[in-house]
Amino acid sequence: MILLMTSRRFQEHGAIKIKRTASARYCNRKMMMCCPKGTTAILCLTILVGSCVVKSVEALHIQDSQQDVTGKALSELKGATSGAATSDTKKERKMLRATKKPTHKPTQSPTGKPTSYILPDLKYKYKALQPFIDATTMEFHHDKHHATYVANINKALEGKPKVDILDLQLDALAAGSAVRNNGGGHYNHAFFWDEMAPPDEAKKTKPSAELEAAINKYFGSFSAMKVAFEARAAPGALFGSGWVWICVTDNEELKLVGTANQDNPLMKGVLDEVMYPILGLDVWEHAYYLKYQNLRTVYVSNWWNVVNWDKVSENFAYAMENKAGVPVRG
Image (cartoon, rainbow, N blue to C red; front, side, top):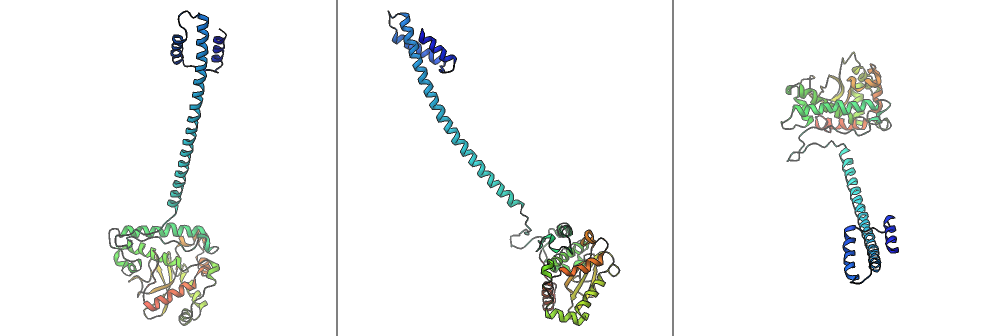
C-alpha cells in the first residue's frame, strides 16, 4: 500500500510518466508470473507496484536518452541548414552586386562585330570638371541627352548593317533626319567628352608645336584664336542650338566654323566643304543652362579651363595625316 501511494504521488508530480496502455499490459503479465495461486492480495499488489515503478524508471531513462539524441540531431541539422542558408545568401548578394555594375558593352554578332552603338563611359567623374561645368549638368548631359541620341540612332538603323559612327556622318543628310540628328548627336558628344579633362590636368596640357604653329598662321596667335572662337559661339553669331568647331581642311588649313543643331563639318552638304574637327564646343542650352542660365558667353570663356590640349593636338595630327575625321568611342 505504501509503494502504491508513493507511485501515485510520483505520477501526480510528473516524476514518473507511464503510458496507460503499456503499463497495463506489463502489469498484467507481472501479475500472471509473480502472483501464483495462494499468494495473498497484499503481497501480490506490493510485487506488482514495485515492478511497475522499476519499469517506469527504466522507460524514463530510455526516453531521456532518446531526447538527448534527437536534440543533438536537431541541433546539427539546424547548424547545417543555417550554414547552407548563409552560403546561399552570400552567393545571392554577390550576384546582386554583379548585376548592379553598369556595363556599356555592345551586343555582339556571330562575327564578333558590334551590332549597335553604345554610350561610352566618361573618362572622369561627373564632378571632375567643376567649378566650370557642374556635376548635375554632366550627369544629365551624358546619361540622358547623349543616351537618347544613342537609343534613337540604334532604333533608326534597326535591322540594317552597322556602319561605323564616323562613316555614318558623311551621308547623314541623305539618310534622313533620324540619322542626321541622332547619328550626329552621338558622334558630336562622344568627341566632346574626350577632349576635356579635370582643370588640374587640363592646365598642364598645351598645344603641340605643330598645332601652335598652325594656330599662329591662321589666327595670328593662341589668344586671338580664343577671342575669335568665343565670338563665333556667341548667341548673336550662332542663334539657337548648335556647335562651334576648329577644323582641318583637305588643304591642311585651320578653319573656325559653326553648325546648327547636331550637324557637324563631317556631313556632306552642311558647309561648303567637308572638314575634320579637332576641337568642338556644345552650345546647346542643356550643356550649360543649369549653372549659367542665359550667360552662354561666360560658359564659353570658362570652358577653356577644361580643354585637354594634348588630346586636341592628337586630333590635329590625325586629321592632318589621314584627311579624315577623328574616330570616337561608342
